[in-house]
Amino acid sequence: MVDILSQKEQSTQKYEALLEQVYIRSKSHRNPRDIRRFIQLACALEPLSEKEGLTTRSSDLNCHQKLEFFLTAGINIGDAFEDLAQRILSWGKQPDVIYDLGYEAQLDSKKNRRGGRINHGIIEMLIPIVTAQLLSDPCYVLSPHEVLKNTVNILMNTSRTDVEYLVKLKKTAYGLSGMFERPVPEYPDARTVFDYYELDRQATERYSSQVWNSEFTNGFPITERLTKAIINSHKSVFSAKVEKAYQLIRDSDHKDVVPAITADCAVCGIYLYLSHNPRDMIIT
Image (cartoon, rainbow, N blue to C red; front, side, top):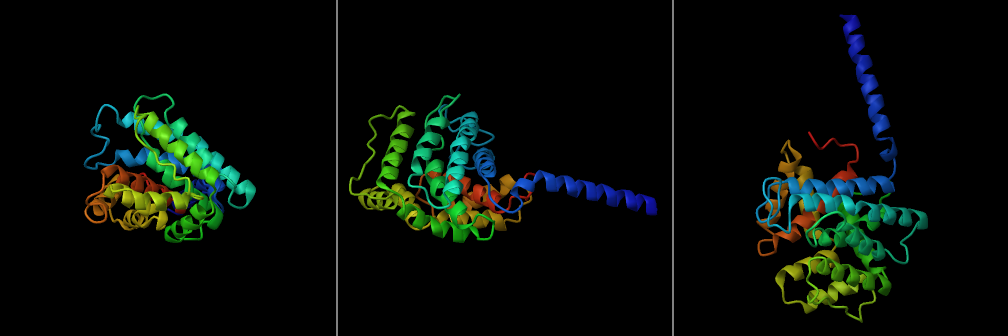
């Protein structure tokens, strides 16, 4: 009996030692490779959840928004975000320009697939979130709420060059869908990306666009609520956690908002869950 227990203890110790090797790179601080991987995972996991009005694991919304397109696009954008993380960490402060890599991510999104703008909103949201995370919480100390609050400072510290890359990002996204005539305002008076979203919030008459712009200017409040719902969910299967959180927002804050915006918030919620709990085995 003693020998059997001893063997079990030895097996447990070996297993735990191997897990330490699995997570050794994520042990004490954020790193570019993990940033890339968490973004790719978040983009891949979100469309697998069953959510009304969106592409899911059981059905494609239409021929232009197939599940394969979302998975491919989500993997494609990882490189640009790894480059963003490397730039931020090498500077040790907010770089002069960050949205050029958002533009690159939008171009990369199209590689090896048909379909149009699959993850345009995700890219826009993750640029300030990742930047705030790396600058204010490099060692997994802050909560998602505290990180998201810091995104406002990130957006206020951007440059006119960032604004111009944001405009290029938006135009490219619509162009990839063949929507070359869709207007993208340039707002010459916007000196920062924060200014851009605030001016657009004031100018647009479309309710969904107002909600979208407010998410950036107010520190991502809806994203935070969705993230909390995922974290606090008692569902055992991760996709069920996401489905429940998504529906909670649809029934409250996003009643009259297009589903794609809620889905973008869900991707960021999954990313925040993963990147704040890098050792959690969420896929069970």
